[in-house]
Length: 220
Image (cartoon, rainbow, N blue to C red):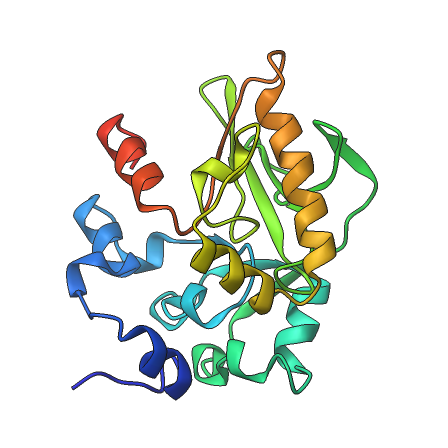
């Protein structure tokens, strides 16, 4: 029996997600040879229902998020209530709130997540899908990976000219808190993807083909 409290009744009814234990974050961590307590930091693009269900599995981790996103989740407007599920943080996560401090990365505003460490992990605000939606940039082996979260849903939105399946496009338009801001940020991401001088790979949360390609290339 599926636990609809973890995703919410409306999300469960609309999308009918299939539970697969091996696909959970905690099981993937174990498959890599680690234990849940080894996870010390979680960096969230946003706190939508389909992005936070695994938080209770890592109660000792610090959860990094833009402050405006945490405020939206803790005090949602009537329009936002179904996208945030209180059960996901009933265990009392160790929230770490971040405010963009004016630093720039590739022409975008940014804030370093772990300023005292050698790890280069940046929050890159990409507001629109939610009030505090952010990308996450990670420097890996001399090049940058930018997780764009739900800024866009289909890989062809970064092409010139862009394209997106009509149903998916309509869903994004309806589901965005500020669709004008989201579309503006997608255009900026498209410009970044075109830059030949920027050694950065962009990907989003929900494009299955992109995920398969990165897994096939060892991206995990």
